[in-house]
Image 1 (tube, rainbow, N blue to C red):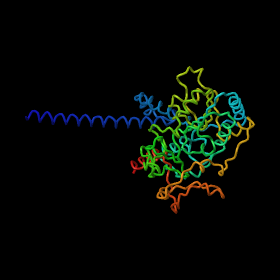
Image 2 (image 1 turned 90 degrees about the horizontal axis):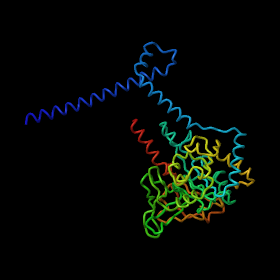
Image 3 (image 1 turned 60 degrees about the vertical axis):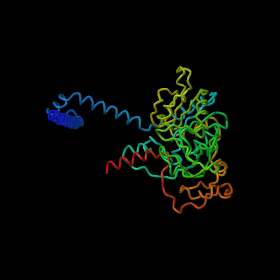
Image 4 (image 1 turned 30 degrees about the vertical axis):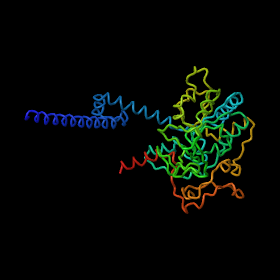
Length: 407
């Protein structure tokens, strides 16, 4: 018995000693990395003999730190925004115009970059949501329902009307493609629409278009909006697909339309997207075909994208600037957004009387003289609380966790 007890005590002591040794080893390695890093920051001519011998003694650490610096420099270059000069931009857009005219089935992929002109933040730009959070900065809130379709949205709608664009696949949740007048059958909103909530208890799924952002109470894996279906009483949920989730709704995601459009496409035009998410959707790139039989790829983005090497043409310019020149080259007039013609007013569903105070988001108001089209949503809270869009929820959660840890 005594021997077993002694063995147990000995075993615990050995484990503790082993764990202590590992901790001390990690601390020594950390100190060496700090010392070597400090020496490497100095110009070679200013290093003392002792510092030079430190580098000789810890060559593996020097190599590792140099590799890390190379990776940081590459990442920094990828995050930098590059602008083509005016002449080069015009020349490239002329090439794009030729491709648009010759395309038999042109599909447009859009990202957050086409909505920045509407004061909606992107994700990975210099002032993007993820960029700011990675730097430990807070991201200012804004009421995204105040945004209106940009020049790029209106150009895309017109290109579809002129039968030059067959389908639009968007990562954006801001609903601006729909509000621009682009027909729903020609649109796939892969990550949902902030104005649409649905009842999945009904068959088929019943859709409710609202005049306000329905994501006030929703976040990652929590999609209930707090309102009820007027037909079956089931809880309504938003349509947003957060990072880490898999979208299963038929509409407004319209994956079927996106996959069919990609299958038929001979030209794909990517506007304002980093493509870091879209690249993962193999069905959008026809990767099962030989490279020579895939659609020709044209990219408009200020930053590096993982598809740059596969593109026929990469244009470094703001989407509104590029589309403005493109429409001029195609001799097509750019329509101006008119709120009186915004489809959302005719699509919107009235709130039930008991739900008029179910949200604090600002309601999109029609122009004067168009009040009859506005569903009666009751009196809004006197001061709408500044809250973030639901699809940013996970990112804001990361920011909050970092702050708590720091505290």
